[in-house]
Length: 273
Image (cartoon, rainbow, N blue to C red; front, side):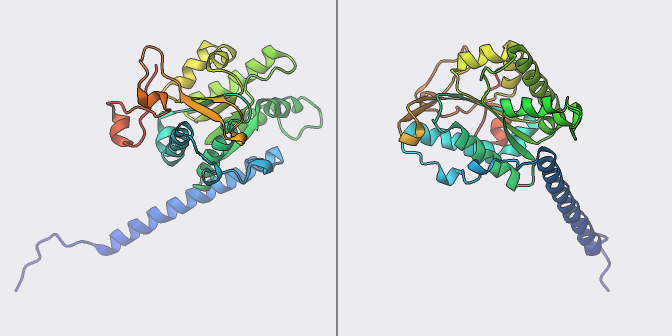
């Protein structure tokens, strides 16, 4: 008579653990869906404005090598967003108006939201208007609730950074408060501005810029004529102290020897801390 080896697998327990894990994942998806709905309800609009909802990677027509390299970088950021979130990696897009910055940023945001994350696209002007509206007696949001609307989303796309309207010092202070809170929460932010890289650094200030750069956050500088006319060029900005190569001049993010490279072989960001 064969003896029981004691190594038999309790399949009922395995099945139960699998069911519990699946239910936990589904519950988390539902929580994030509700959170996105609540976010949009509080702001009285969709996380992605109607004008930009049809923007996607598939509708970004990359004809030049620089465009193709930048498209590849943005796709990699979106597809590896969990790793970007874990490391607090942001993305900075600078350059002339109409060169495809918003298109690619919204494409990333759509990808992230579709995979059960919360996300929001907002301009600096709209963000400040929403916060300032809480000061009125008829506001349904408190100032803290308004701030949290921009701090809690898994991914925030902040557009029109650097536009000068109203009290510039107050604008900068509010932008700093939001970016700093997101930095502390390890929530990635895509920052877009019609500025040069140096102008963006000057506008945000050294403290904010250094925090945005932690984790090796990439900076994409869009130059040339309007993307809508198909004449733009995009270059990858090199961290200070590192020589440019043929690959980086074409907008390709270089691989580095690090744990990030082992985890994400298709895209490794340089740590510029």
